[in-house]
Length: 530
Image 1 (spheres, helix red, strand yellow):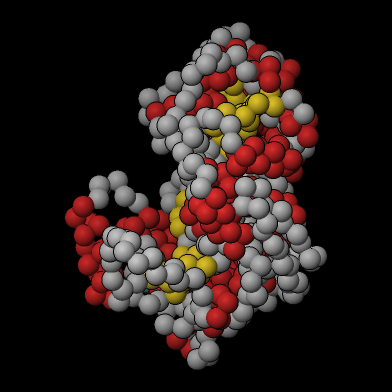
Image 2 (cartoon, rainbow, N blue to C red; image 1 turned 90 degrees about the horizontal axis):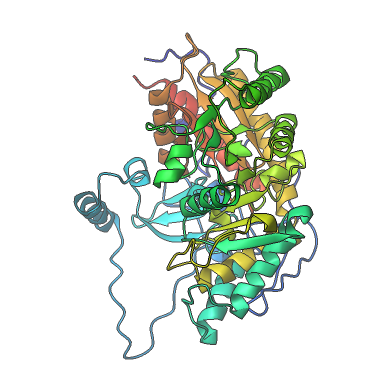
C-alpha cells in the first residue's frame, strides 16, 4: 500500500454542486472563427486571436460544469451533432441503442467477440456515441473530458467543424473515395499544404511516400527506404522508444526481444541512465553514441539510419533536450547516417512547435508522419530528401494509401493549425499546465516527476518512501479520473506515467477543469489499498 502523506487537498465529495473547483491557469482565450470553403482544399480564414474549441464558442458546460461523473455536460453549440435521418427508402444498418443497459450489452459482446489484444477498452469501459471538441458522451449518458484524443490523433478534438466540412465536401462532390496512388485534386491539396508546413530546408527538395494507413507502416517504409539508399542494414535506436507494432517497428522499439539494432541511451532527468540527469546526462549520452560509432572494436558497423522521437510519448513523455538532438544530427551527418524523425505523435503542433524537431532547429533526412495529419482519419506518410529516393516502382505500396477522406480532413487540420497559431497556443498553455502540475507534485509525495512539452504532458507516480515506479497507483489514478469524467491513459516503462494529450483547441477553462479533476484523483487514488 502506498502511504499517503499530504495526498489530500480536499475531499472530492465536498465539491460545489455546480462542478469541480477550477484550478486557475490564467490568460483568457480569444475566439477565432474559421470558414472552410472548397472541401478539396479548405481555405481557412482566421479572424485573429487564439483558437478556442474548434470555431464554436467553448462554454463552461463543456469542460467544467458538466463533463464530470454525472449526467451534466455538453449542450448547445458544444453538443455533438446529431445526424440527419436517411433519405426515404434508404436502408441503414442499425447502429445500436443507448442507455446503461445498452452500454453494458455492447461491452459484454465486445469482450466475447474481440481479441485478447484489445487495450484501451479494458481500462476505459465506456461506449462513446457522440463527441465534440474535448467531450465524449457515452451510451449511458455520461460525459467525459477526453485527454487521450485518439492517442494524439485528434489535434482539433472530436468532430471539428472544418474537418466535418472537408469530409462532407468530398462526399457531396462525387469524388472517388479510393484511388490507390493516383493523382487527384484532393491529394494535390494535401501534399501542397503538407509541404507548406515542413521545415523549409526539407520541403525545398523532398519526396513524399503515401503508406498504409497506420504510423507503424510509415516506420516500416522509412526503414526500407534508408536500407535501400545506403546499402546498409543496421539501425541506431534508443532505450524507451516506441515506433509501432509491426515487426520492423517493434524491433526498433525499446521493448524488443529479438534485438538486431544498436540501442542508445535516451536522455531523461528523473531516471538518468548515467545517474546525473540534465545537460550533463545528455552530453554523456551523446559522447557514448559518438564513441561507439567510432570504435573499430565497438561491434557497431556503420548503420543505415538513426531513428529518434523528439519526445518519447509511450516511453513516458520524455522530451529530447534541444542541444542533445542537435548533437545527434551533427554525429549522423558527419558519418553519412540518415536521421529519421518519428513525428507520428509529436507532429502538427502537439509539442508547441509544428514539428517536434523544430524546437532544436534540426532538419532530419526522413520524417515519419501519421495520426494528426489525417484529421482524425487513417493516413500515414514519410517525407524524405530526394537523394534517398532510390526505390523501384512498387518497392513500397499499400491498398489504402489513397484515402481521399483522410487527405481532405488532413488538409483542413494542417491549415487550421497553421492559420490559427495552435502550435504557439499549445506551447503557452502547456507551460502553464506544467507549472500547475509542478504545484501538484509539491503537494503530493506520490508524484515523482512531471514533464512534457506543449500539450504532451506526463505525471509519474512513485512510491513516496522508495521513489520506485508505482504502476498500481497510476492505474488507480486513471480510474479515479474516469470516475470524475476525465479520460487519461498510462505510459512509461512501468506504466506509471499518467499521460495528458488534450486537443490543441483546449481552452483555459477546459484546461483548468482537466487539472482540477486530476488533482482530486491523485490523493483519492493514494488512499486506496495497492
